[in-house]
Picture 1 (cartoon, helix red, strand yellow):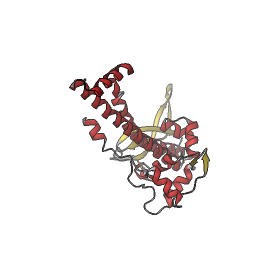
Picture 2 (cartoon, rainbow, N blue to C red):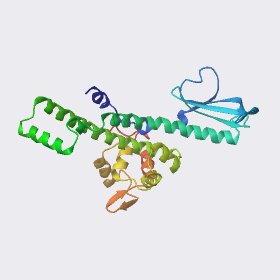
Picture 3 (cartoon, rainbow, N blue to C red):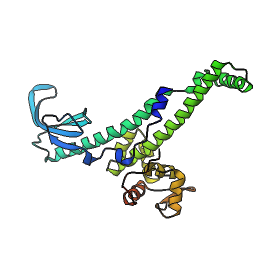
Length: 267
């Protein structure tokens, strides 16, 4: 299956692949401002809402992500970016750009999951019929076409399992990245499309699988590092499951030997 083959090469983004505030240029409008990743500002005038006779003055800000125009806003009364309201708008636009860029990684995986749909429907519409068909295949009485459908459905199921695993890894890294750069729970919930209560729980109680996903290692490896003192001891336990605060995991990434924020290539 061509799409599956191409997508199997997809590698979950590392923390350092996500956009950071320092990676967003801020500049005045001019030739070529629509290229690259930047927040562009210019002094502007616009008519009042509902009354075109009223002209308002201020600055307009536009944000571009790899050349794509992904958002605009205006700050009435501001003369330049030093204005406090303009600074707030700039901060919000940076968060917007970071959110959009990270969400694209999740969307890429989710689109593939949606495209595949429910592979078992290739075999039959109901569980009962599928069970009967698989029974015939096991007994050696199914024809070649039926066997091919079963093989295709099973291959797509395996691909879906891998995609969901990758989605879970990217979601942990995306959430950690947003938290690391100061986004609050409501903003993280909006961009990750995870309920706020779940976001709060993920921040306060990162399980072994989550810590492993964020740091780029296998869960067994993370547990081994913890046992050897090469990773932080748990902050708490939920039942018998060790958990860490997200800040603890991120602090470990920033202070461990090697390049900060660049986990090894797992997932």
